[in-house]
Image (cartoon, rainbow, N blue to C red; front, top):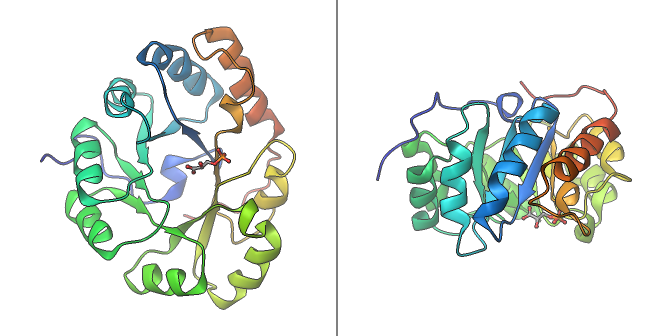
Length: 220
Ligand code: 3PG
């Protein structure tokens, strides 16, 4: 097991200056170059590659070879997932839920870790282990902003990254909230987008960035 070779990430602003974390579930390594070029051109800078397909780790490695990109791993469900992804070049990691042993390993590996939470109990567990920026997943299905409006005042130091059901229509409603550090989602890669077509992918990713209004509440 090796630790990430890039400078360790310590804040969300280093991952997501545009406050968007593009979540990619990749089915073919042939799509990596077009997606990397589009994400870099858009200024988004980061990409979260989920561990959901046979080519995920290989794709993560390819993305990590682009020095302009901050590459993270998503769908981390155990310690093996995390250590393999770090070996492949991930410098941040995201889980759908929270397990203390994964959080501990992330610290040992110097990987910026975003635990996933869906309930007050899970927020309490992750927060008491020192994690203040948490993925709220699946955001829309859990009640979206109305649920977060109820949770946020109870946990004033927590910043959320809602993910799940975010799209061009609701993204700015989330980003307008002071308790939101960034949003995650796959909407820019969705629909019938041909992921091997560089200019089509560039257009889709740039559109996602343009749709985001420049309200700044970025956690530092
Ligand atoms: C995730 O893994 O974070 C979500 O599956 C992304 O959700 P979305 O596809 O609805 O954006």
